[in-house]
Length: 273
Image (cartoon, rainbow, N blue to C red; front, top):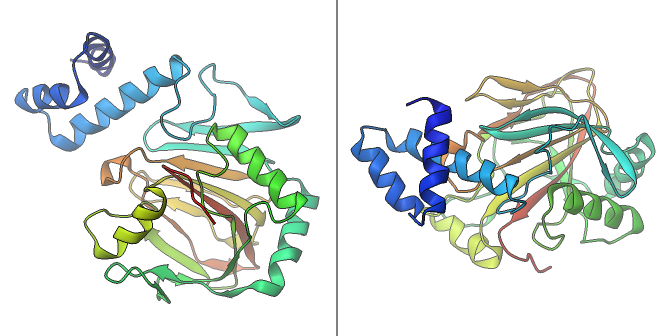
């Protein structure tokens, strides 16, 4: 069965009333590995939902393969779109003036970055994450509100279904080792974050200042390297907390200069702050 035939088979049987679990069982019985079967199901259903205009996870409207999209009166170029992992790169999502303003608003509030401890759920410093960061309050200024609204419109996801924007500064040697952004449901430290607003389902990274060398966003499982370019944005989504989403990523060490980024993580449910 070709990939096109498999896609058509999944769509036909889903629209005939068969549940994804039933189709998964049939694929497993036919000798498919669970990882490949889940990946095929997710890809086919995601594409079909987009064709029907149904948004089940954050997703830009790229069905017609546009070279640019207009959001809030601003034209944003589409540089790259990959289905698996679901990854899109946008050019000049932010203007130079917006980048400068975000950096200046964030600079006085920077502190050492932390990660969520897998066992306790508490914030903890980790050697794999070397940076300084801060969080804005939701829509705390006209600038922050404008950016939040632009993201929400672009990926067609409610503004309040996301964490507040975090700004990060990476100096020379600054990095973030490869990791997944979703919370692993089996870990004790994930219980509280998931309870608050459901799991993370998407990530939107904006480059505020590009380093001279290094600092790329890496997706090692698929061999993709997205170079940091000022004003550009990297979006990726993950419909379920699973390695088959291929969204393991990291920030390569900065070799020369500084890298500043702003990140918004998107959630399943309203994130009340």
